[in-house]
Amino acid sequence: MDAEQRVVHCMITLQGFKYADLAKRPFSSANRTPDPVSIVTYIAAQSKGMKIDVPQSHPKEREAYEIGRETFFYRAGPWDFSCASCHGHDNLRIRTQPLPNFTKTDEAPRSFLGWPGYRMTGGVMHTLQWRLTDCFRQQRFPYLSYVSDTATALLTYLGVNANGAVYTGPGIKR
Image (cartoon, rainbow, N blue to C red; front, top):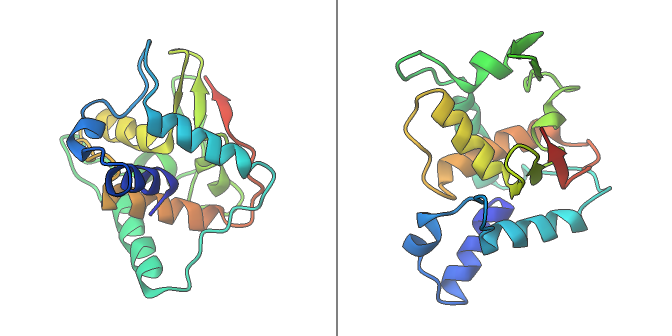
């Protein structure tokens, strides 16, 4: 589990929340920050200055990495995009924003650094789960289910590629 999936799991199994209620509006909006976003932001802040170290010792961890890698390169949808369409090549941009190549060791940490992030354009905190969901939306893919195993696998792939970098979040995003 990634941090957000673990927080939601604990809220459901230990506190009695219902997944359907948490998944109705899982991301921050102009006047509301869901509890999981606040908790994940707090947890992430405790890791500031630490090295990213997503483990790969257990077979399930390695399986999640492989599924995440396959998801990253999987092309589909009406535009035949994948995550790699935007983040698997050098020197690409969307509008004026340069896109990091997450397949390169020196750029891969940018997938994790600064998240959760305070989004200046919306004035709210967002997590990596939100960022992935928004990327899927922009690719015209079906939305990821909130804290799904697919999202966690993709985050595992990105995290392992970012291993060794010093975590600098939570951050501020444009």
